Length: 343
Image (cartoon, rainbow, N blue to C red; front, side, top):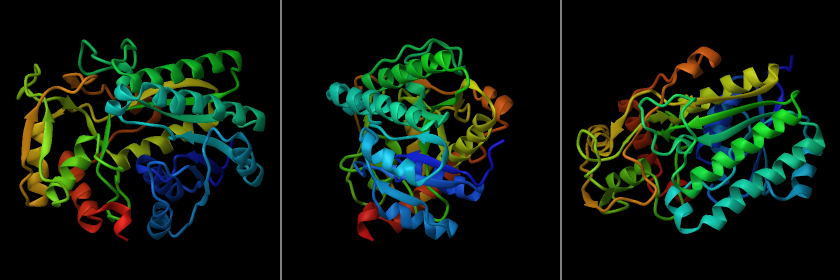
């Protein structure tokens, strides 16, 4: 059994989900070793992790495709496992820039896997996505649902999942956990770390937050003619700290178990875009003006998880509700109106 004080390589650990997971790892007794190229993150997140936990994780500015640089990091640290977040995550951008998405996500992961193999690191948690299910026919979505992504981002995640499955087939002594996220939102309750996208946000929550704080004038709602209760898209939103706790639970299983497992991380509840706007207005006490525009290519009407497998296999269940997601996101945005850059 590997000790809980083990060092864990965290790719993309300065990013939104990565930074929150590093907090959860430290609080669980692990020692994160962060590698991040800072293409969509900020180095100040490292100091904020230290402010929350009292522990400063090791940090290296390094791309996962840089085999030499990553090899140097792994020479300095005896990492027992890897949690792999690094990659592009915007659905809209993947539709307009598919080659970039495949290069960063698929080719970058292949390079990472080669480096890990050369260093004998056999435990991996992979940041996948519910987008691999595409327009699933039945709700809630179980892990047995067909893999049928509808956009290049989802295809890139599905490709990596297949690569990992083939890897475990060839080497059964590997331990790999595939975590299919639904929609991570919110921030650490302290307001020290949160979602800070560069440029115009692709995801709903940070855009709503920026409108509420006055950074942007109006939210665009992509379509109100879906077959849903109010015509707007329905998604399963999960608090980012619940998601972080899910990673720790998956890591603990992965460290002691060979083979590959795939689980959904979600709440099992769907909320529409208008539900989010109303909940955020309550949390912030401010209006969130919006305009309805056409549907966005690659989007589906409804997507929410069947979270039962994570409960059974990992003893994990999301605890925080939509109201807390909105409160914590607003606390982060108020404290950091222009993101990390304003500090």
